[in-house]
Length: 191
Image (cartoon, rainbow, N blue to C red; front, side):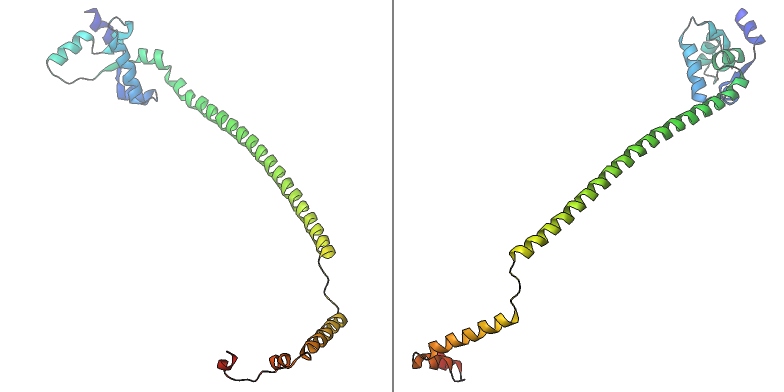
C-alpha cells in the first residue's frame, strides 16, 4: 500500500504533456520511460505510473492504459522547465559557432583557390611571351631562308632567254616547227 501512497503525493503527467513542457520529442520521453521500465529494481520505477503490479492487472483485463511520469523524475533527468528554454539559446550559440567555423574554412579555401588562379595566370602569361618570341624567331628565319620575290627586270630577261632557246630548237628541223604550229581541228587528227 505504500506504493499507492507515494504516487498520490507526486503529480504525474502524460508522455505527450511532458514532451510539450520539456520541449523534447515524444519518442525521447518514451525511450526514457522504457529504459526505466526495463530495469525491475530501478529506484525511479515508483515514479512511473502504472506501477508494475497495476500494469500486470491492466494487461490481464485487456484494458488500455498509458504511462504517466512524475514531474520530479522529469526535472531530474531533463532539468527545470525554465532551463529548457535556455537550451535553445545555447543551441543557437553552437549553430553560430559552427557557421563561423564553416565561414573560416571557406575563406581559407578561397585564399588557396585565389593563389592557384594567380599561379595559373602567371603561367599563361609566360607561355604567351614564349609564343611571341617563337613568332619573332620564325619571322626572322623566313626572312633569312626564303627567297625574295624576283624583280621585274629579271623576270623579263628570263622570259626573253626562254623564247630565244625555244626558237633555236625550232630551227633544227621541220618536225620542230610542225609541232609548234598545229592546225586546229578535231581530236582525231591528233592520234
